[in-house]
Image 1: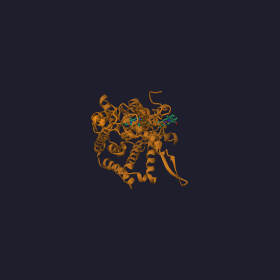
Image 2: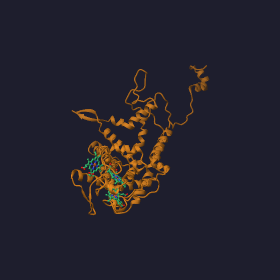
Image 3: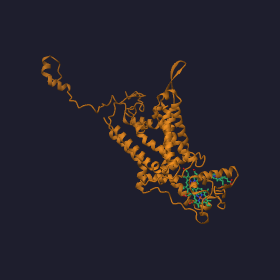
Image 4: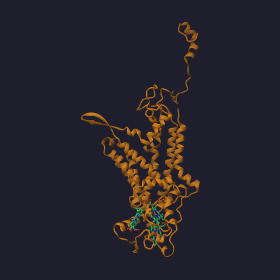
Length: 328
Length: 133
């Protein structure tokens, strides 16, 4: 049911583009107004959200560690899993962001011969890695629409991605890795009772949206082709604030509308882990609670009354009572 | 304790990266308009093999179909939508279907558009183009 709602939402997006561009002639709406609006929401939304995060106090360090803490010199510290300094914490963050180390540790509990057992489960990690990296490459490949002249590295990347040279225009490896990974991530939520129970429309919607974006993209590259040079001219027009929608088929507008929806939805969704991953408190803080004093920023400035001051105040009475004194 | 400075620094990097194409276009003045292409003149200049809009979107598909038809189907005749027949060929400019018979300066036509869109066909590793050996 939750999945169906999300699927329906994505189908409505596609239908809107079809009705708007194929039956009607709302190219200005779908090709100029909506993309500008979506880009603005994306940018402003992310900036506002991250500034909000930046104004929040740093939490007390949570030492969820997987290795030996820095201790006596002859005990070997696990620098990456239990960092003691900011640089070591950066190493842990780099592995987290570039290699999804937390997912790599994913365990699942199973019942084996009536006994509870744990075993490693790397599927989620592998699919997530495939998904994110292929998306990165796809986004970088699309830079050919955003730069004139095109930076050399984009051409190189495109050629490497298309090195199989299957078909004309050639297929890209990442297109299929991307769709395969999204399909797996979706099947994981749909086909596994535990995951289905946990999943919300907000989990399904981005997956269906990515599927729609990928399929419309492949469709117009390999099946119902569009005039790419008009598309680039239109993208560049948007960039230099001289917008004009391209006179191409609705499938391009469906692609664009889905991407616009993704951008506008982004700051309000779980996809904000794009920025949030950098602020994971259990990963980006060094485990130095015992070495450095953590000052809670919302502590009121309290007047401190040290023991020395206390003794000064009550010295006479303490002497009378026969109490020991530090200073006579 | 706050890390506002570091977080805003990261945010600034993100904003600069994501808006880089716009700054680049505005700063260099490359407005990204499509290049002017040299179109065939004279007798060849009436029309392409198929309609111009079809060619712009589908010429790679056409070439692929031609390849299959010529190499696998041994059929080197292509019947265009307007009823004209073309002799399929890539390099021999005496043949009626050869792109370069009419588009005789590919550098001023094919290459310009391809460079604009970041397309680098590998066909010319084997197939000859006019003026190249």
